[in-house]
Length: 366
Image (cartoon, rainbow, N blue to C red; front, side, top):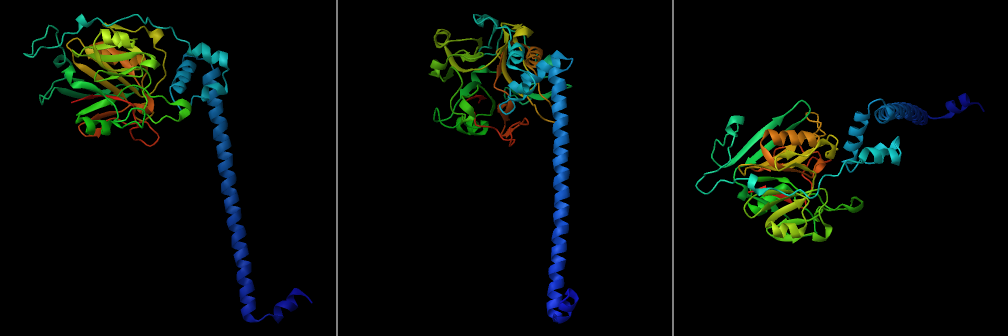
């Protein structure tokens, strides 16, 4: 019996049902072909883009510009997610030769005589040029907030005229989870602040609650057993900022009451750290400094953003010098870089979710 004879034997309803099934099969095959073409296009695009990125990476790492290569390697090194990238085309020996930087003098100590904090009657032996820079405390609250713009980056500076208002904040529970700047501000009734030291992040599992290196909060010492890492920034009981490589014994000797460990030191006793000590890439940055008149400088630089790629350590040195810093130290940067002021974050935070990450401590001001 032929198919034609079978069709004549089907009832109209059966013939209609068979036609519908045939049409559905045709549509499914058509949809499947469309998806196959889309998938093929996406796979081909990914392959082309991947090859292009690998080609660009090869040119950067193996190309004719050592400075571009070194800058790229250091930028990747300062991230948590992309540390592996430089090793794609560079071997261990090549990477180590790029990462080696001269070690700065760890015996340098802060000359406190260079800082002349105004007395209660407002007199000071240091000449302030804030007004000459166009920075005026118009509302009389002792805080000056200003934006910083350059060809390659944008950032913000807060000047706290009275250093006694600045302190180190930490979460209620040491070793637990870190806090955001907003949480610190709420707990301490602070006007604002910036992130400070780094946190222990063994195998990427840190929760931001354990500071990286020697930390002092309101005279109480934490993490003395970890020592000082890349640098140190701490205020003594008179409000003078000390920078360098301080042990706990040094802190006791100098009456340090609020301090964190991070670095490198950017400026010490009015002298900028030589460039050979400041090997870095381009990333979000945070730094703290102090002028000769005692005013505290809090700096953040946006990075990994369309409007601001980021800054180097040397860029931070230049900015701090422009604002009259006598001493200054780099703080934790990257996705930790954050500034909170008058109830909001003022900078563009570069974390994956755009939110302030949990921090082990912060420099805050009341």
